Length: 295
Image (cartoon, rainbow, N blue to C red):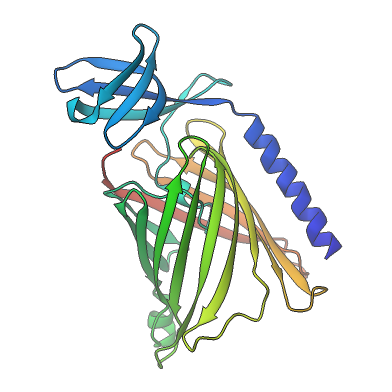
């Protein structure tokens, strides 16, 4: 237990340190319906208007009905490069959910380890749904595959963070229709490109049983290192009924960003339990945006 806590403390310090190294402002480029182009720092936005601090015009508020298009960017003071806000991958770290949601109309396809596929869509700015499943059970085990559905509700606190609550229900890979799931909530501090998330959850099965383990804790984050690269980490600690019996799973990964919003994630997972000769387990996934929505 002491080893797990010490390791997680080191990860928290690392995440906070990385988050503190990026002082960011959200930049926007607005094209109005009459052809005017306005660029500057995003001050606030609502469903009705958007307020921008422009170097030449000062603070200006525009009605969304008068806007033809809005391009969001992210400027890092470290390298003065403009980084596109990652709406799609900011909704999770490697596998665990963050507080952020897709905006209405945005959607993406994700593949994890070849066999696992999923699709997520923003029904509204505050409500998303993801569905997915794996093919290995069907192809090799001739059993009913693992399928899942995951609705998620959340609130975005401007550029300061977000909160979400959701549930994920899985079918078990068996011929009799059974399954399990969990309810989870996540608090994310920071913006979509640089943030730290803390989450917790509770497992259950289709018969109404609750997981024997005490609520697991997730600590993770993602941090934009450059226009093309982000650091990503997911870390879980699970406390069982016996407080002296616990385990943790740690990870370190990189996310490669592409110009069209797609991304490739590559990471290593390491349980705190002894894996004998295995140093870490590899993880790879890819995300492809489908619906762009109205940013």
